[in-house]
Image (cartoon, rainbow, N blue to C red; front, top):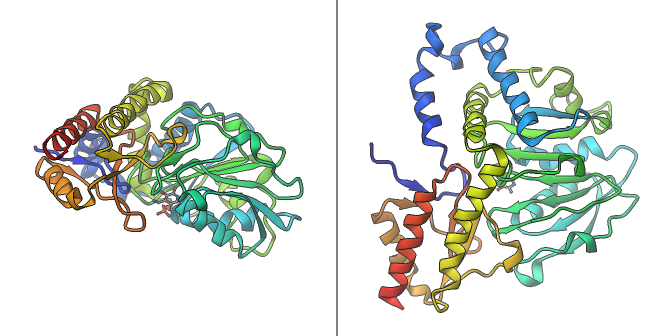
Amino acid sequence: MARKYNFYAGPSTLPFEVLKELEKDLVDYQGSGLSLVETSHRSKEYDEVHFSVINGIKSLLDVPDDYEVLLLGGGATLQFSMIPQNLLGDKSSVDFVVSGTWAKKALADAKLYAEANVLWDGKDGAYTSLPSPADLKPNAESAYLHITSNETINGVQWKDFPESDIPVVADMSSDILSRPLPVDRFGLIYAGAQKNLAPAGVTMVIIRKDMINRAPEKLGAYLKYKTHADKDSLYNTPPVFPIWAMSKVLKWIEGKGGLEGIQELNSRKASLLYGVIDNTDGFYNCPVDKDVRSHMNVVFTLKNEELQDEFLKGASQRDMLGLKGHRSVGGCRASIYNAMPLEGVQALADYMKEFAKKNG
Ligand code: PMP
């Protein structure tokens, strides 16, 4: 089967081995005569998968015992409002770092429930940089400090995280499980699945246990973290298919040497592309500060914008898809999540060099 290289930002490429295993098991799950997606979520079969995911995340990320791993629906977008609704407690303000499109969305929802102090905003630099974590001065009176570990559209990624007396809450939708993480520096981490975890439909939340009970009584059951924590994320029917797929993705990551192995591979992939961008005499340009360039979403422009369509067309003819930048920022973007093989990135790097040589 001819498989194309998928550089889409999300939903995005999944490991080929995982897709093949799902295909094999989809109709008849391990000889049970049923598919797992038509089996009760209270069955022994599903139970095994469900807890293998929760325990797999704990083990890969070395999650300390005083944290809970939750598997929810609603995408990362639901977390934008669930977080302030649950975590404000007796506080009335939250702190934000506005690093790009996704931080802005999280901020807009938080403002519905709390006063928001913007500690840093990358607007003047068109969201191509980040503050130094040590320079941030969170307000002691705020319920938490929100950051976005990787801006999927702008291509900026935190390389180190703030240490703060108030809990740090991080949207890690587009770089979760791409590198080892000091989980104990965070109060809450959340991530939609469709980049590094699984097909869309499940959202992972890692929450410090002491923050689970801050929600007001008058909040719908689903919206309370406590509801899910008390029932091991089986309060209602969980998104069975993406959780099942995630169980396979987690094993695939283990097979790559865990998060250290994956980080090493991701660095090699990112270096290949940034290397081409920086060494083609300005034919390509990455607007992002070198020290915060994303290893997941590599954004770049062509000096001669008129060549962009031809560049994208040529890429597509070579079976490389999804390289057009987000409509809000233009340019090009190569999303090279965990499951993008090194060969795919090498093929893109070779094509970029060839295109620059021909048109430079
Ligand atoms: N945060 C980030 C960093 C994202 O990249 C995305 C989706 N691209 C979201 C949040 C929203 O995620 P969802 O579509 O799962 O709600």
